[in-house]
Length: 441
Image (cartoon, rainbow, N blue to C red; front, top):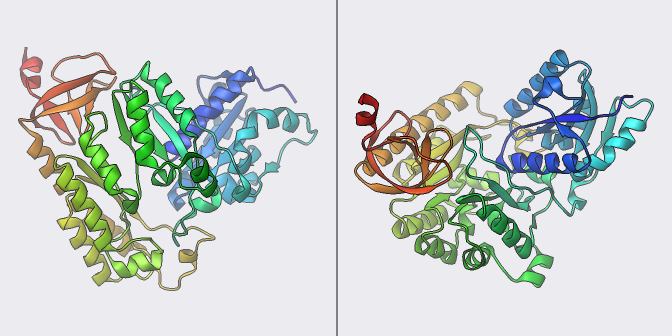
């Protein structure tokens, strides 16, 4: 077998997966491999997968077929969450050379020479017990969608929750945290080049909560943020998704009081019905969630408030969906990520007998997305005439600290924090005052 000299990594799914891919790229380059311009030019194509929904799985399989068709000589290595969940399914797909689970993802650079030396190198599967995994890949990764000015730093991996719909704990393992000094070192390094840094994780609010870590560090997320503010020069920190009950009083008050923390609260809801939340084995009820969100709103009235909401969970009745709809309607949401329930093999929910018909699921998703769009428009309209702090992107736009895209009135250097006067709303975001005059001149 010819030696692998070049590689290309294609990432699927969440920011954590993107961060894994960036870290893996750095490790492979240290081994002497060169990043290719794309899958067609690479000796090795790594698909770093997601498996949170059926659609995510389908996207991976389509990509495998496309890579094999366009570059039949390339070795294809599938890793990530789908690889951990269903390695034997993936290894049977024509073109797949190796499948390496999350359990061994950190070892891919060392595994490659050994796998390549094997005479019958096709069809190799390397997947172990994810629950015994200790470390995790972590490297800052630029954001997506043309934005290269807001790196994501993954500081937490895994999840100890047992939500009945979710496959992630079984493919990511138990919760583990990046040590404090490593977090501070990474943020210091990023602050030399970037104005805003996004802290992310699989269950970010659980940072520092594992027993051994707590005995050594005795810190929680709010304590970590205080040290980041005190000991680094980063201009703005943004938190990605945090479970509702991890938005403690201390964390919310710190977010509200510090001008260096983005006013942005994303707290997964999943359902506004207590009966559905109970079947999901979520660790809160609607009244608990409402208490946290209303507290955040009182402290930060102009903040972004977002949530993940699922429609069509097994057994969800019309009345239960109506509870969710009404809950969303009265909450101060500025945007929603609405997902249609997707059966994940191996989860308790997938074995339920009372699945909601797919057309009903999709109709409920449509209704919530329409409601979310209306709430987002109303929020954007409130911002007209205001001065908003934003970080400039490299696509001619800026992102406000309360998570709104702004079309700039004139070209500005990317990667700067600026105050913008908002003139009007656009189809999806805001327009800086003066833009129409600039365009007309």
